[in-house]
Image 1 (cartoon, helix red, strand yellow):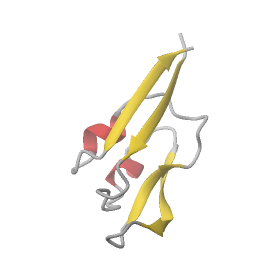
Image 2: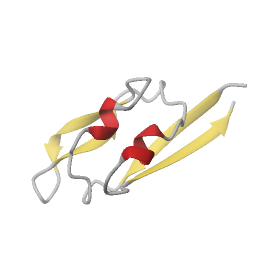
Image 3: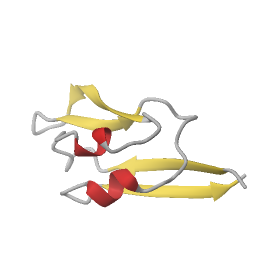
Image 4: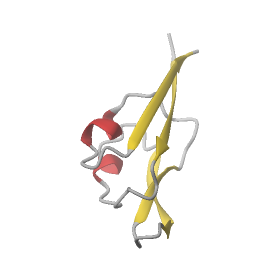
Length: 73
């Protein structure tokens, strides 16, 4: 059974610490070159097809700004 995942990030609360990026096993996420209203580079899905919905990013996020969705395909 294959899994397909996606994340939603509260970009205004993301501080761009990068802990989630380092813990993504599929290299799906990255920090944006753009900044939010507080001046932080925020998280986004750089490679939409790689996400399996493992929740590693949400688990390690110190500010709990990542929501993970996962569906069976």
